[in-house]
Each structure stands twice: as C-alpha cells, then as structure tokens.
Length: 104
Image (cartoon, rainbow, N blue to C red; front, top):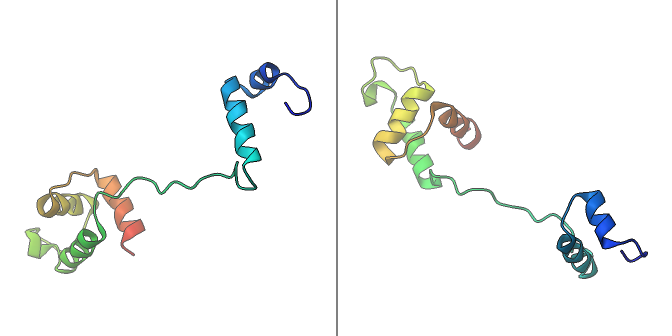
C-alpha cells in the first residue's frame, strides 16, 4: 500500500478483508515486534500440578490397592482412577497423553 498498490487488490490477492491490511500496517509501524507472533499458552490443564502429583502417588500404590486383580496399569484403569479421585472424565487416549507428557 505504501508503494501505491490498491488496498482492494492487496486484500483480494491475500484473501483478507481490507480492515486487516490497515491493522497490519499499523502494527508494523508500531515497532520491530509489531507483527511478531504472540505466543498462546494454550488451555489450562484440567488436572492441576497438585492433582497430578497425587495421581502419581495413587499409581505408585499399585493397581491392586485400587481394586484391580493385578498390577497392570492401563489407560482405561487410570481413566477410572482419575474419575474416582478427581471427578474428572477423560477419554483413555487423552489419559495416555497426560501420562506421557506430564508424568515422565
């Protein structure tokens, strides 16, 4: 736009609305980080760090301590343990991710 190109043409080429161009130009002029990506922390985990520590302790007690017939921990069993102790409902695949990413 600063070189004389029509805002309408630029917006059409980029597939955006004209007001976005003006907003971007203003951001670019605001400083060196004006158009920098802004990090997003993501959603707040449903299981807090304290609850996660408690879950780890529960798992260390062993599966038989929680009523299962053997010591095998499965995602389905951990899902049930979380439901019983924290009243949170997760899909077993999500529990698998929690265990892999947050308990290591």
